[in-house]
Length: 258
Length: 260
Image 1 (tube, rainbow over the protein chains, first blue to last red):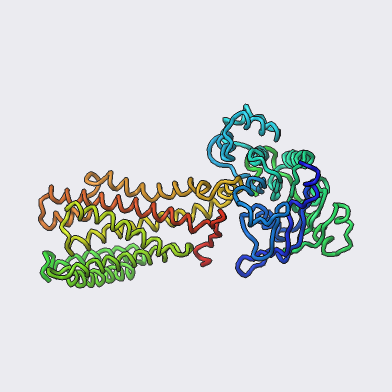
Image 2: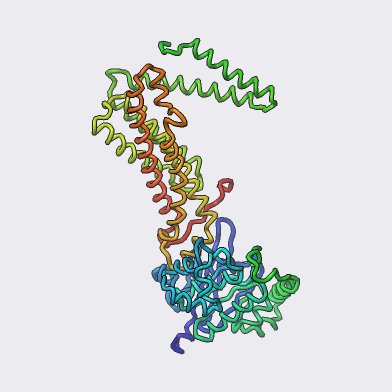
């Protein structure tokens, strides 16, 4: 990616609000996601994190306001083309019936050699996995397979919605490493989480959401040192929750159940 | 009443309802009121229908009355589909259009090839059979499509996020819903004559028609139903996809039935 692209925000939110009926999920959001590195969005449940992700991929449109992708209004771009440029990884891996190869082919790429290549890139053994039933993959393997499927489309940016929330500790660390690799190779990453420790490990830039509003932005240190009691409340609550959480059995298919 | 059954016959058959009520009371099922209510309602509805049909299809009456009755049936069937699947806006109109299209096609074939003469006695019952069966299948396919798209929303959105158009992203789920709606009809067609005698044939046999003549009528009726069910469910299934996705390939949020 040319260095000039780094200066253009990958996403800009300008006065964005989202309401579902009577409920307002995001309120007048003004936010820029830098065109490089990993931007981590943290916030408690119901703060609007997933809505933010869905907006980026145009799975929903804002009730008001404008979202720009690299400076261009998202709505003026071809939606299918935009979605191929924005690689989305969901919280729960979407595994379809059939083999891992069948699942990867949903990306539009049916070349087994390319499948093996991209599986290797996410740390999976393609030779062994391609013919295996995708339903038999462990939670961590399934999520990495989903990332591989997303990478097959050739995205310019990665957007992830709590991709490690239902994974064991080891699988979560592998996925974090892959996000770092992507960012290092020039693909900006928008990583949504409620895990403050993960924010510390990953973030080049941080955004703190609460009740549908941005309450802090900056480097991890700036956010952690924020004197704002509302920010400290979010960071404290989420950090406490993370420490209290226990990890499920690694590599068990049941490990990805909430 | 000039029918072969007559009032005495009707009264005698009501004894069977009384037996069912007695059984319900004996077993403590608490269904007595429902059994009596449903039986009385059916009696009143069918007697009213008999009177109306008698007026509509009377010899010498203009065929316009029969076609008008068909339109009423189509409108009522569309309204019923809307009522059963209220989550999808405009489904009643879509279904009514599908029933009208299927009626034109199927009755067009039957009357166009002279299988039956065009008169009130053929138009109304044939359209009724076709619309009634199509309505049941349409409700089934609509409920199934709505359930599939609601339950499989994460899977569908994962496909959309990979850049698939909504048509491709929803195709496996629509296919499954159409199969679910059509398989009972295919099974019924396959089992006819071996496991059960269908209503139209039973009616003709009771009326003293030659069995081979009754069979021929029944075959035509079954093919009519099969064709119209396939046609209406396909039209409604494809139309549903246009209503459940935006032009921007976004899945429309589907409220639960209780939320509407």
